[in-house]
Length: 270
Image (cartoon, rainbow, N blue to C red; front, side):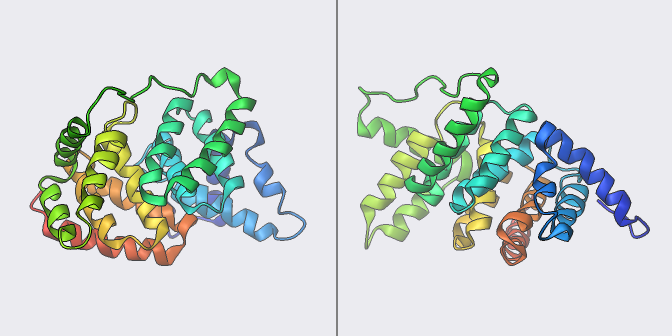
């Protein structure tokens, strides 16, 4: 984070250092590509995006890349930037299997088309980086499992994240779409949240990022801010995730998310 007396040159140099960590040998190409049309924008990317935001404490570089992959997948219209940040995630130690799991997770919040498009970008990135490892983790599909077993597992997983939220879900949907409530529990929590790979804390960080940039999921963002804190995440991590999303979803989305966080923090005793 910058100080009042710090120069733009110092912020720029700090940003370049972080950019080199994330972007690797080709990291500066994104800045150089703007030299002929908007060189100042390239400088702002380095100074603000990496010198100010990425240099903050509160989240590790792997965490920052994971939330970017989730957010850019959810947005659905930033394939070049998603590719850059998938490469960046690999550069800072996130595995291909972890990246795939985060994209699959995002299907809950942005839909299957967004996840499928994200996986297309990821496939191309992995093809260029075979040394990074296998993107396919052990299958979590249980062909012989009954719907009731999925449901029970979903209720248990939902309780880990959101306490008694299952009761509220059914109460809210009982008069119009009770099946939607059951699908939410069976698929979102019985299938997706129960998959191996990223832990619940990481999944909730990714969810907060996705719900922030979407800008249309205020109630769900509040639920998952509570969820992040319930599974061991911190207020600092929640705030840092939202601040970072200003660079990807815009300041209005980040300001709205901070307003939601203020409400959530005020409701809690911890």
